[in-house]
Every structure is written in structure tokens, then in C-alpha cells.
Length: 285
Ligand code: C5P
Image (tube, rainbow, N blue to C red; front, top):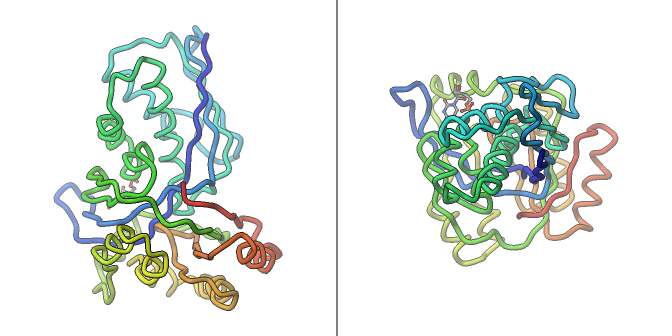
């Protein structure tokens, strides 16, 4: 039996635009995504000689074929036609669920990377990302990591220059948002403001953090904030302590701020920690 270890890194959406509904029921997106240092740890035993198992350190997460990490392993072995003779997956969770930080997708991506490495890299990283699209919309980005323009359902990726050095503070409130319902809701309203993805790309190319911050925008943010005014409270703390940008990530409910250094981040964290146990400080990865 061999044990594989792989880090599963969370993502933030620096921009997120929903372009329209597709015939398959999904939506076409255009989003600049960024990997951050908040991570789960994934371990995989290969060759247990027993039926597949999955354990997770957090309660309430499905530990069977519904888990994206399990689905990723299934897709990998189906496509490669390899037989692992039993696997056991263990996930130590730190990425909060229902946050818009891609936690389940990061775990799935980590499984794909670990298995690909173990079997001598039958897939290039972009072919592996394509495989990930069968598992979930955010999985391809979570396979590749870094900074990227993500389009289509999430399967079209273009790497962008690394984000300029900065620190993120991320706060996940108690409530969660149903992603399918949020997509339904956005179909029913006119989108009054959209991110300028071209300007974001230019800001990244120039390595200009100020311009990156000016262009942080997620079309889901106003829709969710309207129903959960609590997000305004968190943003007001970010704002009053000098954050250069603050916005919800993905379909929420986590909101993040971009600050210049750890000192700023620590002060903001201490202001939020009393009310919010799920506050993180992270770096772009
Ligand atoms: O693919 P994933 O499981 O992340 O998507 C969750 C749900 O979010 C989908 O079932 C769909 O309702 C919605 N979605 C969408 N368009 C996308 C991504 C997700 O409509 N590009």
C-alpha cells in the first residue's frame, strides 16, 4: 500500500461575471480566479485491498460517492482504466464549506494531481484540468492553480501573471447560499454592474495592485448582500480599517478584503473574531 499526500488550496474570485444561461442549464462565466494559501490536506492510500472509503475531519460532509474527491478518483480510474485495488481518502478540512472558496473542488483537484503523479503523469496539467471539468465547474481551475481567466462553465482557462504581493482577510458568516438558486435569481434580474475583466487583466499584466483592487467585482455580491445585510457589516469593518478592496467570492457567503500587509490583516481579524469564528488571513499562491 502507498500513501499519497497533496495540498488542496482554496480560491477567491477577484472578478466574476455571469454572461448568460446555456442550453445545458449551466451559465457561461468570465472570472479571474486566484489561488490562496488556505488549504485542506488530502491523503490517499492506494491498494488497501478493501472497498473504497472516504473520511473527512468536518461533520456534515458526505463521505461517499457524492463527495467531489471521490468523484474525481472515480473519473481518473474510469478514464485511465487502472485498478487501484481499493483506495482510502482522508481529508483534513480547513476551507469552510458553502463559502464560495471552492473547498470541495480543491479536494477533487488534489486527488487528480496526486493520482496523476502516482501513475507517472499520464495527463498534462491542462488535460488533467479538462478531466476535472467532469467533476465540477471550479475543479479545472483548482487543478491548475495560480491566477487565471476562467471562461465557459469553468472549463476554459488562461493563465495570467501572478497577482502582486498582498494579504487577504476572508470572513465566512454563518449563513450559506444555494449556488443553483443564486444562478436562478440572477437570471431573473437585470445585472446593473459588471466587472471590467480587460482592465483586471491589464492590471495583473502591469503588476499594479492598486488597479487590481479597483477592478475587484462579483455580480453575485449585490444580489446576496441585498438579502443578507450582515455582509455590509463585515465590509464596513474592512472599509474602516483601510482595506483597498472587499467583495464576496463565488456564490458566497465568504467575503474577502485585500490589504497591504499582515499588520493590517491582524487588526481586521481581531475586530471580526468575536462575532465570526471563520476568519482567515491568506496570501496569494
Ligand atoms: O458544477 P458545480 O457543481 O460547481 O455547480 C453547482 C450548480 O451551480 C450547478 O448545478 C448549476 O445550477 C450552477 N452553475 C451554473 N453555471 C456554472 C456553474 C454552476 O449554472 N457555470
